[in-house]
Length: 137
Image 1 (cartoon, rainbow, N blue to C red):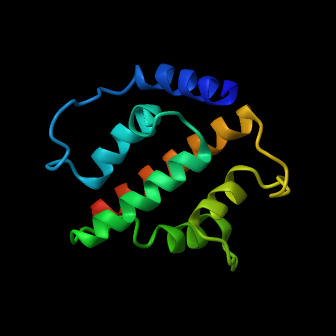
Image 2: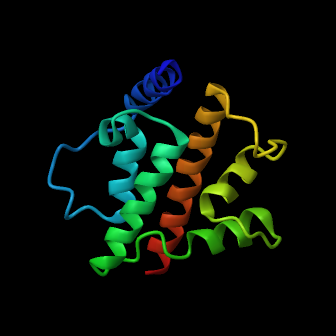
């Protein structure tokens, strides 16, 4: 629980730079909605952790695709093409960890600092992916 409190505090401070929009999320683009989520993930999922955030994003992706939006379609391939430039069998959460923590052994639990860094990298990569996708649309 102590780990989550540190992450929530970090993201609460980070959220001060983002204008949270307590409005109907339906007219927001996927990028705008996920920027709101990235600013305060604990507000959406109860407490902040890499696992909680990736589970939320997986659920978001499935719901978005079910309703006809692209969701995170193409994110994994974009990560491979733009940031790893090699084949990997990992799903996108594992790829993000590889990018954020190239020396991590994938066995040891993440420290609070590693969790924060991984989430910062995830939210940055996700925003860049969605920005590129919007520019093409």
